[in-house]
Amino acid sequence: MAFIKRILMKTKQAEKSKAEKKGKKTSSKKETTNSKTDSKKNNPKVTSSSTQTKNPSTNRGTSTAQKNKFKELGLKMPCWLKCDYSAFHAFKCVGHMTKEQLKEAGLSNHRQKLWRQSGLIKEVFKNQNDGTRIVAYEMTQKGYNVARSEMFMSGFYTPQPRALEHDIKLASDYLVRTPEERESWMTETELRNAFIAKVASGEFVKEPGKDYSSCDGAYVDSVSGELIFSEAIGRGYTTAMITAKENFAGAFGGTIRKY
Image (cartoon, rainbow, N blue to C red):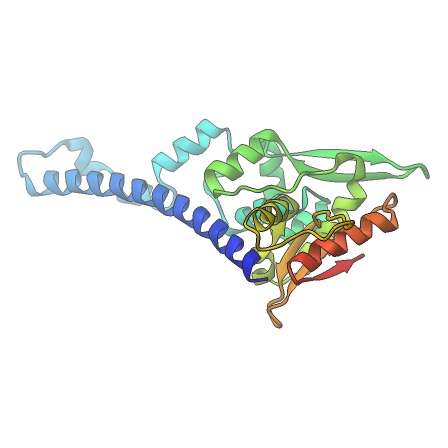
């Protein structure tokens, strides 16, 4: 439990560090611009008519630099909102979501439309034997690139396009969690890396004859502080596969939720 919390803290610190570095660069540019502006204000010789007639109200909200950046990225929205971060984080953790789940993740119908027009997500589907069709959304390569560069995310869950129902079940479990629990969520990829590090450091020794398989995700319960592992059981899961998942959760002293 302590080990995985340390891994989680390191991941969050790395993401925060990247965000702060980017913020400092932006701040530095703003300071340079402000100093130039102050110099012009204090120098009576600089009295350009275009400067005098410029309406300051046009600079409110999204900066020109940010608008230009979004234009370069081909994004149809003027700025990022909190709901965008929430949706990116949800995709990072579960891979696929339905239209309704996207709403639960924070994206309104209008915002979903902007994401589609921006090329961040695409619709995917799977035909069922009973004639029905499962429809969901997944991030495009552009979406992943933006999540890395703009939201500083890493350790993405690997989507399963051939098992959409699995990812949708996982998304349902993720979305009923509290904001704190969602933020503490570790993906299957992050858990696997943490397990490898735990074994390599000698903190955990595999028992002979036991198999270990990473769970779909894990989060810290906001009430008890307990580490809960989440596993969406697919149709093809065998008893041995489920046991390997249980062994994996046990290696971290956590509890597994199977559904």
